[in-house]
Length: 161
Ligand SMILES: NC(=O)C[C@H](N)C(=O)O
Image (cartoon, rainbow, N blue to C red; front, side, top):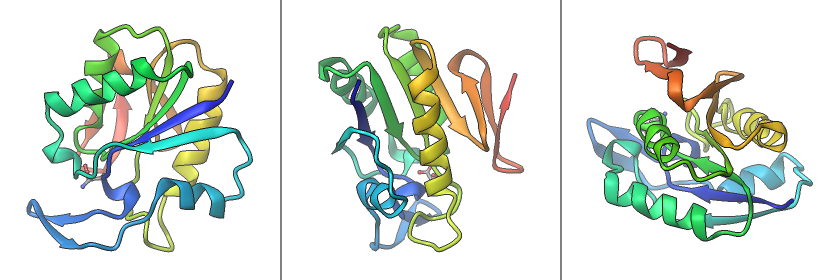
């Protein structure tokens, strides 16, 4: 089954914000990160938003849900900023869409050499191939279920609760 990737912005795409103001405009496409990493998996990709996740609101989450529902793939990778990733996972989890949906992002700008973006994308894509339907966050080399995940803003880690 083909994987469908939906991208929404965030640090993974190189959006650099400080105090809610954008610092620069150099970004990177998820597609380019994946082709640099020699990913051979069959996927389609659509970029639907270009936002730091602090600006993602429930209208955006409705849009994300619509895009997931209307796509014929049952395997969805959603790239998203980390700050409100848990909120979006919870929003999607409550909709019980009966697809496997994995959210990932990055802590270090996707435009930087030392970014965690390729690792997180590869990890999330692999997880997506084997997980049961549901909503998950794949970050810090760990898979979290939407029902019991929180983000620890002190150390930039996702944790189970
Ligand atoms: N690491 C991140 O993705 C933080 C980011 N600024 C966001 O969109 O939430």
